[in-house]
Image 1 (tube, rainbow, N blue to C red):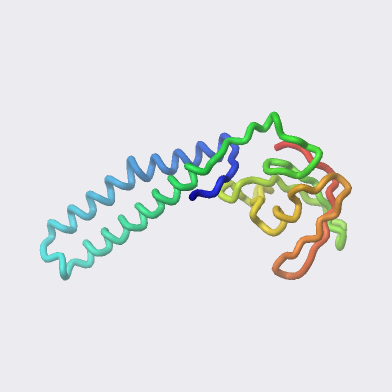
Image 2 (cartoon, rainbow, N blue to C red):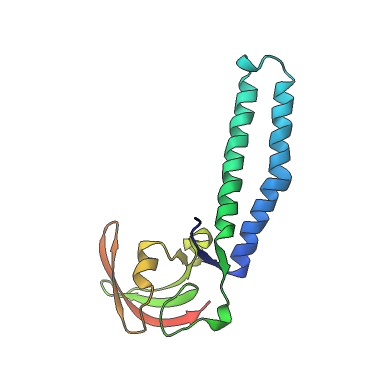
Length: 158
């Protein structure tokens, strides 16, 4: 059974585009590479054929994984999101209680996470720690190098 994941319209489109590219472009390329390698003779000693078959196997695994992800994907209606507590697609302004540093994170599905643009996965330690919190709450989060306390300053939609 596939796991349900929530996506923005942009994130869902990105997944579908990747799947279509793999099926429409990469799969025919892999078949062509296998056919070309097969035409070169004895398959028992043909490293090119073995490599092409292995590449095709990885491609089919990626396609199956994307299909599974998409089967459990749900589109989030951003206009109906509650901003009283931290949810998927909430943008959260937090203050690190140890050093006073303020940061802003947007919680997204794992496949949409991009720390450079402030998007963190709801499955990450910080994402899990912030979920369900309200403005004024302090989230105590276990991270690889210890524990951090983040105070929720504000919650908004993306």
